[in-house]
Image 1 (spheres, rainbow, N blue to C red):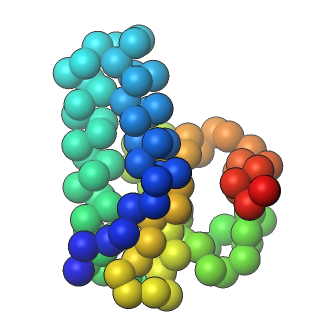
Image 2 (image 1 turned 90 degrees about the horizontal axis):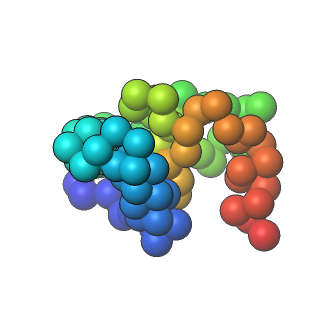
Length: 101
């Protein structure tokens, strides 16, 4: 089943692409973006994949790693809902608190 990607997650993906393109070129940005999109589709096929991060949020979100990024998604609804794509080095607790407001 194809996952639902929120507007915020689409913006995250564009910002990741833009950041990589400005530093490493369009081809590198395209490769990373394509890989993240492929992993998003895998998540849609296997809801529940990945792990919880209780230090970040409650168990309503699961996380799936791709390169240095984490795809955060709600796994209970069908289809799953991709809510964020964020670099793993960010302060995830602050990131998600800011998203809630």
